[in-house]
Length: 80
Ligand SMILES: [Zn+2]
Image 1 (cartoon, rainbow, N blue to C red):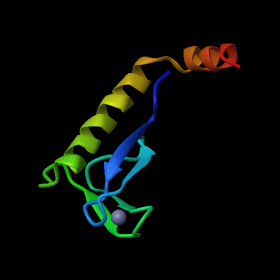
Image 2: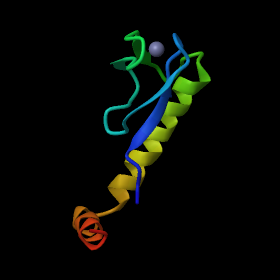
Image 3: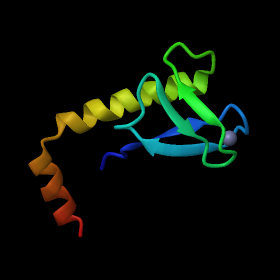
Image 4: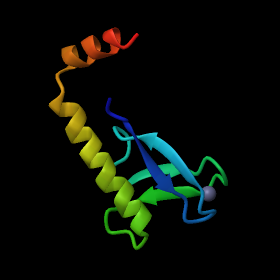
């Protein structure tokens, strides 16, 4: 199973939350789900958690693209 969400740490309140890897990319903006602070995810951010979130998202997208859509459907049908 591929987890398609990545963890993002809010630099404002230090809480972790999750967002879909397909949306998390360089320049992506999101409001913290805890304190509503607007975060901008930049690859060259000084925050190592933001850089890691972008790296993880890239890896998850690559992993998802490596699995053909039909295989994914078959796998989810089997697990039900
Ligand atoms: Zn926050």
